[in-house]
Amino acid sequence: MVSVRNLTFSYRRRPVFNGLDLELKPGSIYGLLGRNGTGKSTLLRNMAGLLFPQQGRLDVLGFEPRKRQPAFLRQVFLLPEEFYLPPITIARWVRHTACFYPHFSFQQFHQYIAGFDIPAEGTMQEMSYGQQKKLLISFALAVNAPLLLMDEPTNGLDIISKGQFRKVIAGALDEKKCILISTHQVKDLENLIDRILVIEDGKILFEQDIETIAQKLTFSFSFDPEDLSRALYSESSFKGNALVLPNTDGDDSRPDLEMLYKAVILASEQINKAFKS
Image (cartoon, rainbow, N blue to C red; front, side, top):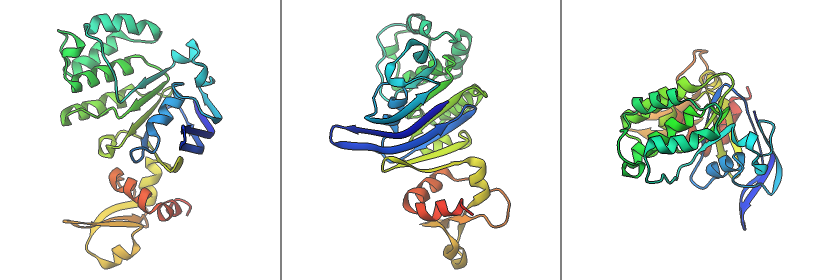
């Protein structure tokens, strides 16, 4: 689906990637996590052919993205964090945009906007930012592209809409599609993604599927000093110490993505060591 080998990219004198390697396979929803400025959006734009690497090889669906061939553009959709919608009606915008995507489903699109409670009247610029974001999410899913790239899709959504987002994304995945979601709002992806990617210092610092994480790590709260001494990562809270521990009892635990992300960033050596055993 997507193969990134030795990717090097920089903005003038500011390096972003230096030898990044990555593989994405169909049938999965990937969560791309990382601090602000670590290159999450840049990586998505390289995959979409909007930015060009200085070195390395980037293969997306058998195409070189930088060439922006029509056959490639029909199969990849990037939902950007920042966007502009013209002052026209939804119907007119969809009519003039959907024609570029051969697998676009008008039926699915109307189901999604109905589920998001998006008003059909007025122009798109009269909508709130959250409504515009939900409109774009609905369109992105209705495109039915094999590769869907989403950059901070839950920004601007309220709590109810975030729950709707998780539901529609989970329902849109099939064995032929790959969805890559870049976000810093880790909690928004819980119970949705099945593989975690953490990017730091221009490289993939951590990559594991949710099932393996549940087998290898335990997330808990404890006041017990013995538990604290065994922890791979810990932080104090009003409930006690929040801990990331090696899973020694063999029972799968429910991963806490926010704790996992902080543990990977602040204690990467200890966390990665737990997956080598």
